[in-house]
Image 1 (cartoon, rainbow, N blue to C red):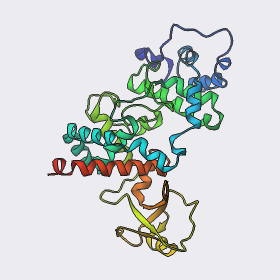
Image 2: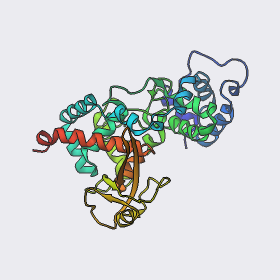
Image 3: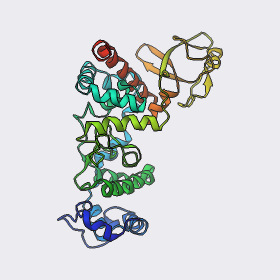
Image 4: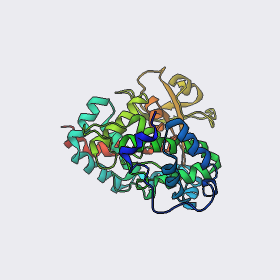
Length: 333
């Protein structure tokens, strides 16, 4: 447990900013924040004044709330896909792989996650580090934790993790920037994921997902390994829908049915599965010319642990394939 004395060596972590609270409780600025402060003081021994000052200068952002209500994953596939799978993103992915060839090979060897998947994640999340997010994370988490009831509990938990992350990594919490949801670094880790899955791959004593490519790349791979990536197994394959096929509108993204069952229901894989009893899920994508069907394997589900969307997993997978195809000859001689 951390106490107030433990904060003394890292006074920059919970910086007492020049701005001060107006008269009255913190709840007037962020409803529920007073109780949150007391919880942090009781559970972790954080300094009440410093934490109150940090949250007191956190800004509520209407643009963050609007972004939460209009996620890209709500779009149909034919609108979602062009956001992430572009000639530029593919070319930049090839360049990123070439620039970090040795690192990616080392990470793939250690964690068993294909370099192409890691590169695609970083490409989808931050365009290979060029778009790291312009929101202060404390503003994002305060906005969503105290002003967005549908997910307030989750984001207050992330705010708690953010405070602890600051202590663990020596971050100036009033300066850290990320996405509108508080995700950080090249791989856009939320605070709980940062604490749980980030690794110090360059062994410099800090898990730095902004400036350290070794840390960022290895952390993405570690995330997938910890979520059960199966080395050498496929991700997804196209499927044919036959006449009279059963409607499977509400099937879960987690594979639960053997390929043989899918065939019986009228959906056959274009490529032979590793085993006819391999568990799969059905993915239906809305294109401009009708529905497109895929069977997703366990590793497809693992990708979705990064973002719980079949569209996201498919975008990452297809981007990874296109990048790998263009780097096949010079990356894998």
